[in-house]
Image (cartoon, rainbow, N blue to C red):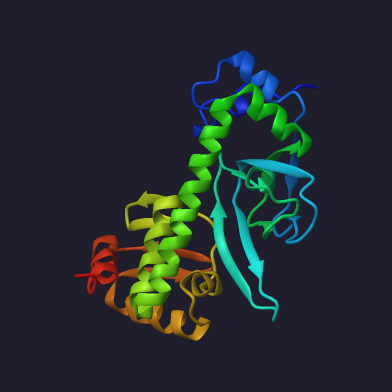
Length: 231
């Protein structure tokens, strides 16, 4: 049974596509559910498919040769991921796992060339997505090289809030399960250091954390901490 085009209509990567175009895009696709914690693909495995997240949240992370784990980013609904073929790679550069129960659309890798040839806008939109992720990676690298750890943690929380923040009466909630270890990996520091910083900020009323949830009670003050030494 063909997938409903309304599933992907309105996602930025398909901006400007007519309904009949979306039907062609979905012709070789299927939807798959992944339970919380399930591995979607593994780093170094043959890139036989590419994906679009419909619902849930996906964690992309890399393993270094010495076994250290590094969170690359969290994928949100409407985002393409696992698009190794778009950067000329035959294998996946990272692991991907479902943070919560998630639904994805899956295409065979062989469909990529046909789709971008037929729909140049898809190639352009995808390149913009990849460019944005590269810019984010460059920003994180610059922070690692030039900023002290408190600023790096503040920038990490602000990026997560921008990507998945939901306004509540008490502040901005990062609206998916995230651990202090995740924040440590994204900030290039240790769990102990992140725990110390967040505990201090909790006492100051800047954040509230627990049960894999982080609430930014005072995002403006966190922004000031992130930018405090940038001038």
